[in-house]
Length: 143
Image (cartoon, rainbow, N blue to C red):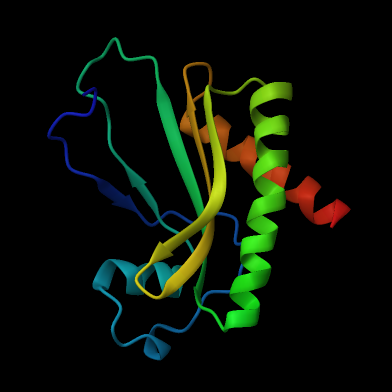
């Protein structure tokens, strides 16, 4: 594929916070990387394509919610079902950012979160992140 053997790099640069970070002491099972994310609220993982001619980029913005009670998980799944259609319409059809636009529930062990993924040949990951954040703000404003 386009991604070579280049390792993922963690960048703990501050990102806009959507959810309050959990205290690392509340999650003793967290790995050092996850603990840093929990303490700082956000983390970027990057990998650069080994093919300099590769025009595609991608982003997955994950809003980590942790372990949820059944009622909270049901709400998350309902939100994801509605948001998925709106994300596709807004980010792919209207803004024409990429040929892959997905929004849904992502599980990491027992933890859940809402993830938005875009693969694009017309925008950088930074631009895609800005569009996702704008879309999320629109969803919040109408919700």
